[in-house]
View 1 (cartoon, rainbow, N blue to C red):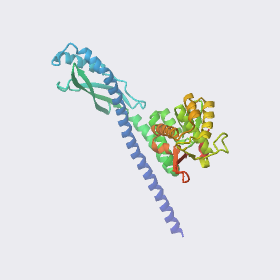
View 2: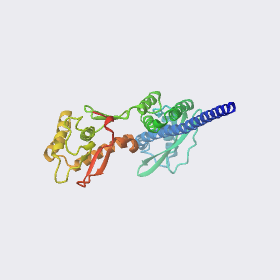
View 3: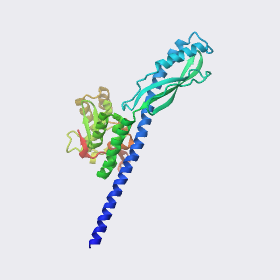
Length: 358
């Protein structure tokens, strides 16, 4: 009996050690992956920012500086190149994450026919660099200017932020396995929206831990989904609210249409018979909450038509997918099925009624 107890205890301790080792290894690997990704995104953001600025300003300034020179005028080209280098010697292109510092750019080649210039600057402490190309015209001739962007990578900040994110992710995987699959995508989306700063990470974590509800705000024509607020165009917003009311059920929402409302389903009207009853309730909703007069007049004159329902559902879908992505948006979009009696399609919100707050 004693031997069996010792063996069981040893097996348990071995299992605990193995689990901790796997967790530590997972944390280290995730830290490295997130750090590499963070450095790449920061450099790409800096490159994009500078490239957009150069594309907007450089062609005009070069045209002014070289308007009285020939392409072969080496002295003028060198003078202009040195002036460009001087202007780009110190740049503020770090993004919200502030992972890059001491950024500078140097002109490599101003004209496609000119020899490549030797770069002399180098960033301090683990420099990262990338090449930028900007199209411009010298007279009628198309040219391409090449630049090298160099920045200092803030390694302690990069590792600290991503080590924290990796630790949070591993802890969630260990402590909340069923919840992890639902929360982690929202955490990553929150980081994408708010960045790696301390405030951004707090906001991202708040989004990940937010309830999976959909909450409507008629004054702002916005809906908050899992902690993320989206402002919709007025008319699609009210159609979205209309489907939410139907999903809640006529017993809970005064003014819900009594027809085609079993479990929130709304049957598309026939092409030759608009739904006048539902149109009446939509008109009341839009009138009370500041809807567009044009949409109200259309419902008054023509009733609720399948084409208009389809258009507004698609507009809601497009906006939700743009902000949330298709996977995260899916629970807040629409389910569709063909009605066996009429062979027309009917639709309802996929979100469960207990998660809808009007």
